[in-house]
Image 1 (spheres, one colour):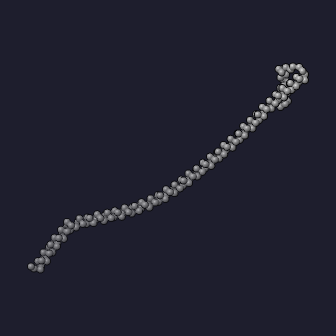
Image 2 (cartoon, helix red, strand yellow):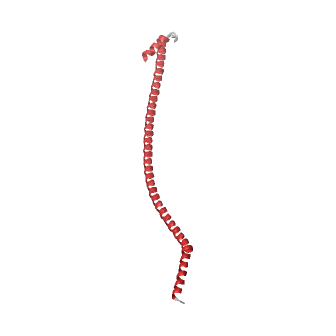
Image 3 (cartoon, rainbow, N blue to C red):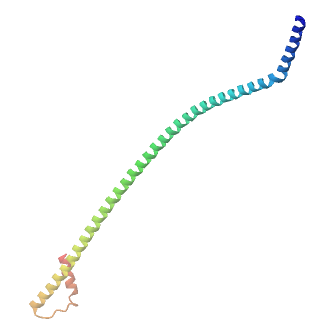
Length: 157
């Protein structure tokens, strides 16, 4: 065999193997590598997006916490204001009830005193009539002397 013929045959076989590899073997390998690179790139992009979403979510959480604290403070202030108003209203109502009770007690005491005075006047008038009757030893007609008794009552007031 000749070295040149062997070399040419090897060269032809090498080019056929190269062509076959480039035509049938290399495209699926390149396709698999491209798909793998795309998956890795998608994964990295998803990780970057997740980081950005996490930062955004953390900012949103901080903002919501701030709003919740403000709302809680406002609610607390409103509750304290309402409690103070209720306490003031209760105190005013208690003072009004105490004043009314005092007025009622004074009115009742005044009415009782007035009734007692009236009863005492009538007893004094009756005693005066009885005394006058005993002194005069004669019967006194009460109907005839109603005006006299009324004047006596007025004088005793």
